Amino acid sequence: MWHSFCDWYLELSKTIFYSENNQNIEETRNVASYVFAQILVILHPFIPFLTEEIWLKNKLDKDGEDFLMLKNWSDATATKDKDYDEVNEIIEFVSAIRSFKNEIEISPGSFVNILIDKINPNTKEFIERNLNTLKKIGRINEFLNEDIKKPSANLIIKGEIFKIYFDEDIELSKIKTTLLNKKSKIEKEMERINTKLNNKSFIERAPNDIVEQEKSNFINLEKDVNKLNYTLESL
Image (cartoon, rainbow, N blue to C red; front, top):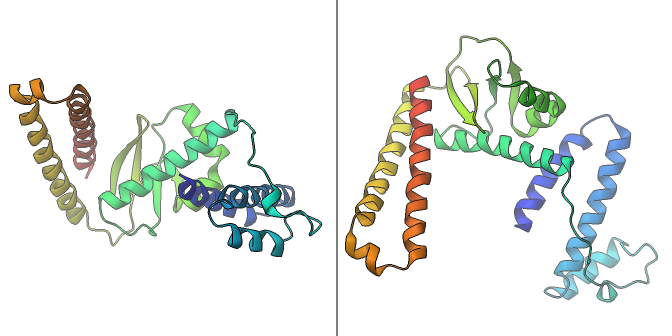
């Protein structure tokens, strides 16, 4: 959890540090310093000598006299507001783009263009508010309002249809083959689960939580197949 949090925090911070907004840069620097200090406080019981040295060398106590071992864990309660939700939406959007690239086995560092002519106004406003951040960490060249003649495929993110354009050297036939192979593997797993769920002996003997987990797995795999089918139809 902490690893994931730190990764995203660093990525989102980069977009601000590379900007020209000095006020935002200063605020982000202060927040980063606070987060770094709190991580050291949390880690101190587990790696005390290392965290204490980092704490003192970076003068995080401000006066060089307040040792880390004297600090208590924070008892602050996290609050969720519209900014919290906005950041989660950014993470969800970028994660969907990255997962899509991984599924079709194209380089995670490759840039794409995205057509947004069919999305709802609220989603467009979200993109406009976070345009630079989404483009930088999502490796997106442009968000387009008109179709262009380039290799592409459709992707559904939170119920919205986005058309993803690839570089000219991307071969759609290879992408299609990759997706078909993945679909075949998922369908085999669905068949295995379905056979198990139709086995009366399994249903009677297995714990309820195991049966429910298998049902949930089947539903999630079915959703994955539907998404793959939609993408395949757009190629």
